[in-house]
Length: 106
Image (cartoon, rainbow, N blue to C red):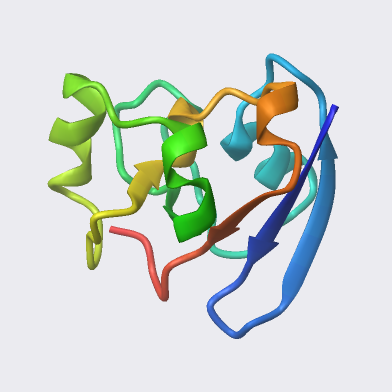
């Protein structure tokens, strides 16, 4: 299990206990984190689960693979720390992960 903190665009924090093997997106949906729409259900076929990984966690969260990078082209206000939350798998190494939800999804 890992604790993930989602910070909504308005600054509201949502702390979630996430099981290993799940994704950051799945846990956002299960816990009704606002701003994560996940229209494709985690298939990396849209950009509606876009998040900004906190700078302290960028290295541990990893870098996007080619398909994710392609989908990020459709995301709103992409930053160097942008990721699709459906592509971030929860592991013990991500205990304490902080992600910020953008103002809107694509």
